Image (tube, rainbow, N blue to C red; front, side, top):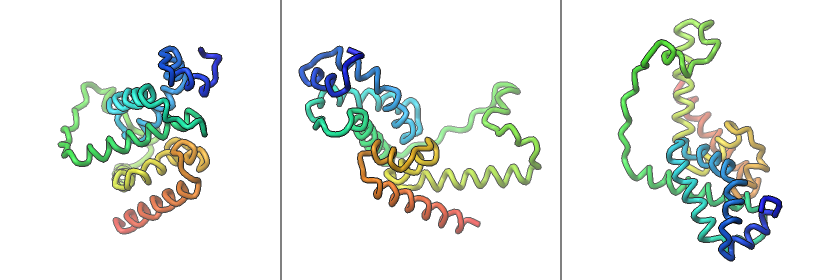
Length: 192
């Protein structure tokens, strides 16, 4: 099955071929999972959503039009599933858990930049506060704009790649990115 193209595998999958499904799952699982983690920023939720995306592949294979790549189609499904998850999570209030205390000395240094020791405490505090303001600003963006922002700036994807993955025109990607950057700059400027 691995020698067959995605298109041929989809034709077999429409007829209920489980080995075609397994082959598509093997080919696209990591890319779909990466997309989900990028959007929901939660490994556990991404694993659950990954199952949903591939369940939809199995149950809705006949909906694939044959235009565009199977990978692009799966990534669009993943994006929609992830955004729906975020919308429903936003409606359910979540209480933050208290921060865990480090168990040993090694844990106390995790998550720090390697060169932080060269900075004085005031610079460390300022950098930490600035990063937290930036994170809050990105998290406050509407889901679609936040997803584009993260793909471009965290995954180093090109505008064309983002457009293909999301199944939207490049102009829409540019517009969403422009909006996100302007909003973040405005919020960070107001915070100073």
